[in-house]
Image (cartoon, rainbow, N blue to C red; front, side, top):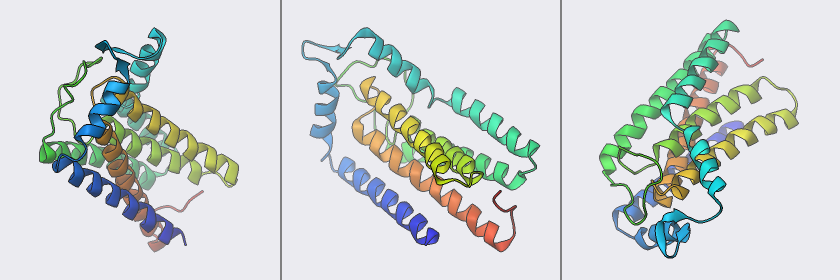
Length: 220
């Protein structure tokens, strides 16, 4: 049953990514993307985001949680912890998932070659291509993988749900912040979530397969 659940999530995520990518390539998402970005800005000033000033400050803080600096720090801390606990295979899986996600994200960006939104002013500096959102994709990979590893060490369903819930909420908040700050189209973020989720669950499925074969240490 778990194998079917993994297959279903991976298939749905890949289908979502491919559908969004196809619609984006054909220009079908342009009106939707622009409408969402404009709705998050003052009607009289595209450089002024809606809401009080502290909302923008919160969004800047949230978006930093999906940046290379924070994710690299989390990766190093998580891998170090797993190695200290003697879980070398889990540490390797965490490293492969995140580093592989970074490589995949950059390859997808180069392949689709979509420029950043120009319909509204950017509220943070950006220097890379737009599709899919690297923050959305890599936060999904990192936090979902870490959440799954933490949930794996718990026996109770409540704690398992808590760890995965926190991972999902962080991923959603980080991706949403990119749209609010005007540096990504909504479809960039949706595609990033789909690609990141698919990659995270592929890595997790491979790890479980190796575990059943006896190639990695079992769950606690």
